Image 1 (cartoon, helix red, strand yellow):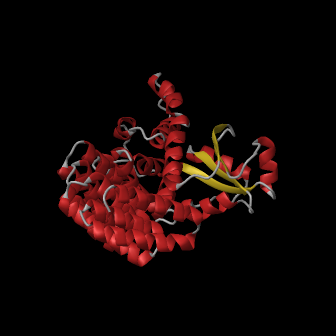
Image 2: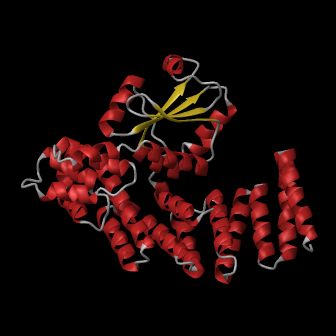
Image 3: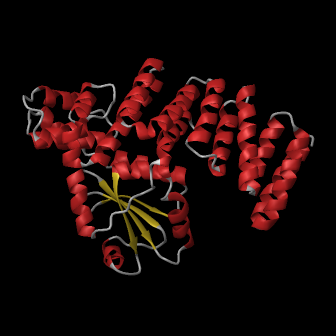
Length: 391
């Protein structure tokens, strides 16, 4: 996994105790298009069938994922449509479906941006969403008008929103507008501040927290909390990019001051990301241990992911590999699944514990026989490979 991708996934994961996965829109297709126009977003449609196994797997394993929810709820209007009943039957007349699931990304004019057939795992689905954001970028349309001198407030607001949705910086345009305003307390300007407060280390973020109660009265508490979280994440990523511990500390302190409910998870996650970017295995191991306990509640699936990340990135760092072994052992004993024991075996072998690694592999094979032929084949292939290395 590329470092930038791993950092993105870690950035999204810290809020999992708060996030609830994808929130699907329950209105009509016409209402979804109207909402997409209002919010300057594309629509994600899960075109599924109730009998479809891969559809059920995505509904069970991908859509509830906290990282997926944090990303898709921010950037898309999300819908699920059963293609064999109700509005789905009408939908497929315009948007034909020949396989399930089919994943549509559609702009507010009803035009397909991207269409993908087949189920995706969490990482692939997040990558697909990132790709669509680039394809759906409308900021250049507004940029042309703005550079020609159009300073209509509604146009500037749409321009800023389009830049934000495309993952581009909107601070220059936002500051130009707000610096020309004599009264920031109007409803329009308060909504503008909410949209424009994209980085915690900015003057506009200070405007947001200063006017927080009035903005919450207009847009709701959750919208303000989400903006605070996103702004702190943006400053955290900038701190990593510029290798600035001071900026990282500022982002953590602002989260603590203005969104204390998720501040601890954010601090631990950002410490992990910073250590990863600095290639500091000791710091990463220390932060990940706290993160597993306080944020992930020692969930075995998440523990095995941390074990693999430590092993991939810090295989030469003894303290990191010691922590990877501890994560893998806890995951194996708590989860009692063959692939957890395979990970545990691999890490034990890497740590020079061949005898213990073989015992873990034998346990994996025992559990694999309960899973089915594919699991057995994978486990036996691993054991054969390790025997060739001297088991």
